[in-house]
Amino acid sequence: EKGGFPSFMEKEIHDQPDAVLQTLLGRSDINGKLTLDELRIDPQLLKNVDKIIVLACGTSAYAGQVAKYAIEHWCRIATEVELSHEFRYRDPIVDENTLIVSISQSGETMDTLMAVRYAKEQGAKTVSICNTNGSTIPRESDAVLYTHAGPEIAVASTKAFLAQITAAYLLGLYLAQLRGNKFQGEIKDILADLNKIPAKIQRILDNEAQIKELGVSMADAKSVLFLGRHVGFPVAMEGALKLKELAYIHAEGFAAGELKHGPIALIEEGQPVFVVVPSPRGRDSLHAKVVSNIQEVRARGAKTIVIAEEGDEAVKAYAEHVFYIPETPVLLAPLLSTVPLQIFALALASAKGYDVDQPRNLAKSVTVE
Ligand code: M6R
Image 1 (cartoon, rainbow, N blue to C red):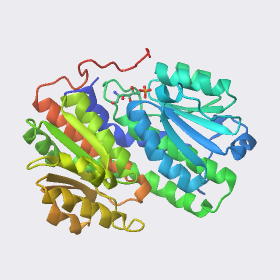
Image 2: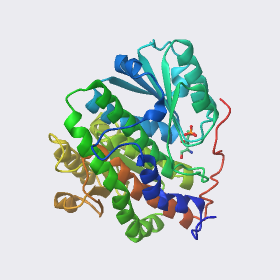
Image 3: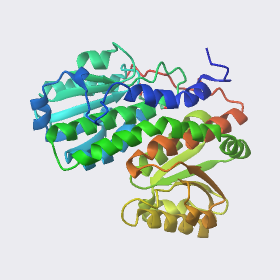
Image 4: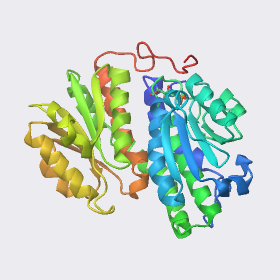
């Protein structure tokens, strides 16, 4: 049942090309038109949406944070991401033009369920992105977009995360299509690039030995930091969460731009810092900014481990280790850059002899508040 892998988690990491593929399948036509008929929500209502609030916890919330960048770019709809348990206990501004997008692998997370119920009571429309057919959150939502990652058994989420980003992107592209804004031309291109993602994930998996080796060699690390900007920021937080959950190591993900506002004080000789570097082909000076962040931490003794796009030679001079991911548009990069971080956490935790499928103190579905 583990498909020949030593753990469910390792199997699920290797299931990722298929998880993304299955989530994309049958949801667009060859002309690049999204066909999310399954949403069964009045298109007029979706056209009227003036605010999106994504509600989720843990890894699913990081998927939401990634999606925010894409949805705002494609749809020009203000999008907030909030932890379900925080949303419920403030006084959020929600009305019938608010679209709530909940993201939950299990569909049973009590915090998210209660937040969705609360938003519904306020008159919001609710869409659930969920991996578990017939579970409670999709049943209680107005509409559902299933991620087709297949059952996820390991407590630490991996393939569901990539499938959640994929589904949220499809939803974003669908809303952009429906609202007929100026990104119509981009939709077809993005879909074509999304369809290339599974093969690119496979290429990363085929070269996993190098990152596994690094994970094993760092089994004694006491603390690992992760930096990213833009969509790389939630990826950094997800990389840190995997390490906390699996290896019980102190790990933090930061927005690289925040460094000088505090976190740089943590850097001392030998501190390992992962940096998720955006494509040099991306917009503005994002790449240059991150490269200078690498230099800043390195100058203070950090051991820098860089995830960068193939062909990005500029980072080599500043990195102890570089892991390359295939080229892809900036917004799609999280579907690739997350994978080495998952493999790293898995290898490190395995080297410490920990049970990666059942980390201590955690449950797969958190059905209590
Ligand atoms: O089933 P859900 O997606 O609602 O679960 C949310 C979180 O509990 C979950 O992502 C948790 O953070 C995982 N253990 C992360 O690996």
